[in-house]
Image 1 (cartoon, each protein chain N blue to C red):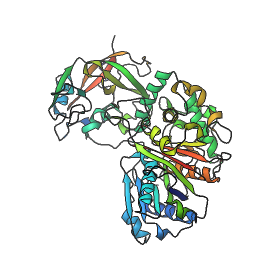
Image 2: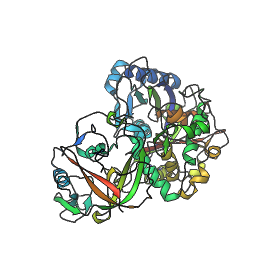
Image 3: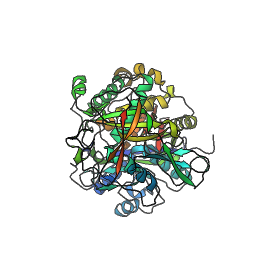
Image 4: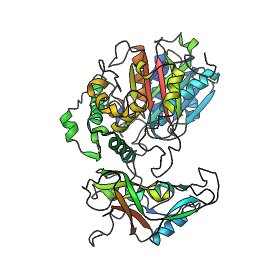
Length: 390
Length: 146
């Protein structure tokens, strides 16, 4: 075994989440949501929450590790880390950091969490109102280019132009997410099925994204617990072993004012090969994938950059039949994901990957052994995770 | 631009102001003169955008400016329907364009694409810069070259 790997040395032994709410509707403050999710994840793992000694976060989470450790009465804190960058790019990266901390002996039980209460704090989909703007935003904000939906659309449209892609793959992703959410009582859109007619008639946010191509904005919290493979043997439920984790970015991807070297990219091109090399598998070995969908268009590009299909094959591969459980070639976002379960900045996708490989998903892929998570397409850094059962 | 519509987007969006580091003072002074400039390394002559404190190619800190023609290529564009800022409440749809500048190492700039918001210009169309004077700063807009 390669000396420099976390493969099979670390496992996720518990997952948890609060009730997921529509934006601004959480009845309690964000910090309490974080505490609740962490307690639920510890309970799922069968450990005392006070035995957690590592806290891993991302996206500039407001709920600071030392406050959590103090409030939860952790016996000691051995690791506190954060992935750079806002948005969902750090979701799998925070799991990777936790795995590294556990593998290095900094932490015995490390929690990864995300908490959001957009009523208590600001919204993601709206611009702040100011009189002046300087720096990078001076080149975009005066032109009404403000929010991720817009710059993801710009990149998606360039990709669609280059490869002759129409609306169908985008619709397939939105429809698949809503379909899967109908089986998932945790999902905010549970009991709210989406028809193709509703999708087609829904308003444009920014072309090519209809309303249903966009993630929701939600309140809630999700958490998961990692420990060593040895300790995982005593866990209450079947462990999901880390097969590979990676984070990173392409050459000059974050060049400002839309100057990414490779523009129409999800930013996984240099990362995905490292991921599969660590895992020792190929894309065809993956049983299901949880692909971060802030916007549907980024999903098809992410699927391409992970080698699930070629860009010229998107129209044939990214269809509702192919990406839905249980029978699709590659079921994706089987909990409903950011579009229909909850926009927990993609950490709900990690929890779903764990549930798939331990066999208790609400939309179970038969005999799923290997699940991939791709976090935060197009931002920098992005990150990936593969978990499997043994 | 017609007399009824002074600016492409309504007033109320933030006005650009040079960064406190002074890194892009020349850019905003140039647009006031209706000139388009791009940051260029004085050492290796590489252009880069947005402006940075170091040349990404040769790591020189000696950076200057290159005057460009304002002729570009429409690399991507989108039609925005959702008012993401209160000032845009009655301004949708509007077009945002990403334009490549062939005479500046294909760096890209962002602006609005002037004209009918329901137009569907082909990707890679030739476009040209249009300077839009506001009281405190001049924006760089784009229109399909005709």
